[in-house]
Image (tube, rainbow, N blue to C red; front, side, top):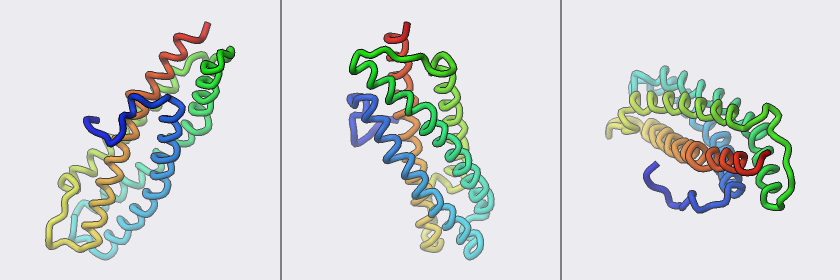
Length: 179
């Protein structure tokens, strides 16, 4: 990620984790279904706007399903441990190792899932001609392309924050603070 309105690298890890949860996770769950509904409407009413709408629909559906599973793993397993670990380090309390020994393996899995999702979104980018709409397409299609672009940009920010800052930061904390 080359630009952002925030200097995420300067944020404490727990605040950045809050941001990922409250902005990105909520955003995916809020915006994804609305976008999927618009895709379905476009497939039914204006299939001529893009012959690839059925493939876009299938990809975006796969995306939301995979992301929901991914978000659940972060929210229910990984991030609670991050908060506990961050708090223990801040208050100089001992902390038990992660239930599988180290956080590196689950982090690797999360990063692989990010890669898979970006591949899916990159395919949608190609199918939408880099998220562009011809002037003679319907307003709904223009809205759809804009929503898909916004979803993609938010996902890029999300994966950057986690892959480049949160995950390496907690791996470093773990290496420095576990016996």
